[in-house]
Length: 265
Image (tube, rainbow, N blue to C red; front, side):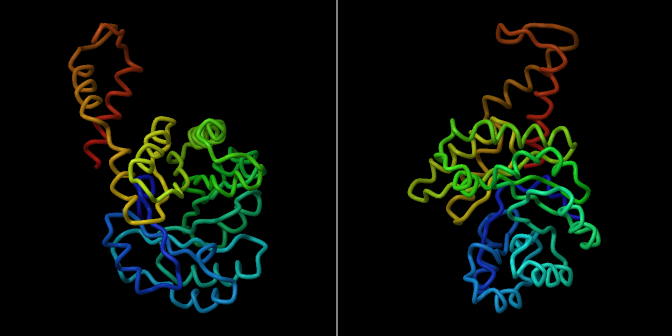
């Protein structure tokens, strides 16, 4: 069973471009998302469905299917059930009962619930607690389109925070942030990923190979954080001062998490 909680920088590739599958796997991504939804024109979806496979890599292969209620959804699910996929990425995740019904058909294949609408966010806590849902994913661009709001950090802060809280309450892995559409500067991607990490998210969707390195770097603790964590854990038990700040057990929990992240990198 693939540990989906460790996925930090999954890379999208159109499902109708099989010549790109192996390149995506060799890009440094820690998972490959074959996309049957937005990346494939409607008339090309049947052919793309037949191109989906997993033998090009040992990395987790995730399939983004078309949303429930669309004409392609049932055929996508039938194709997915015949493949050793790591998970299905479900767009427009909104109704917990419908998601639970889908999960029951998948024979234990995990679902990544893509939250990209007002209804999806309103139901995020119930969706996160739904059997079969391994992780929430933020579809921030679609979310903004649904609400008619700007795609800005300060605008999306409540939504991101709610997905982190919903995941924690349900006891599932922290959510994956949405894409950075601006490909002009890797620093933009890194800063976006760092912002998501600071909020408690632990991954970010990538749409181009040049985004992978900055995303993976952003989710690693800095040298300053590592040094702080080591000094905190060397300070003993009880309440003590480190760098002029009070340290007790909740602070040590944070320090242990930082060093664990380094070990898992």
